[in-house]
Image (cartoon, rainbow, N blue to C red; front, side, top):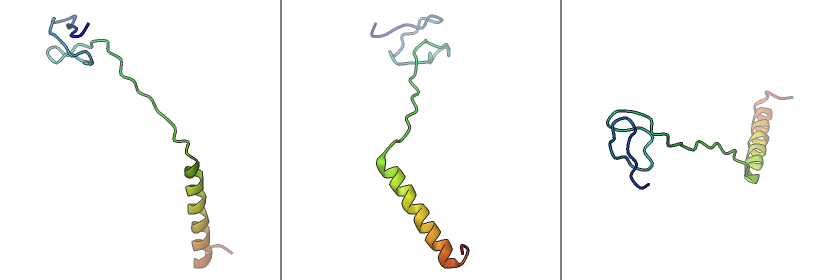
Length: 65
């Protein structure tokens, strides 16, 4: 169905509408909420470089023995 109708007020809706703009009823269209973890090889390398330079800076400032 290209243009579904609201079950509450019979207004013609967009196929992707989650809420009817006229009456506010839910249309039953699901929204995908997908959380993806960033698993990139450079992420670990970047974190390692940041930790290394932080330790070097702390040693230079005299905070580390």
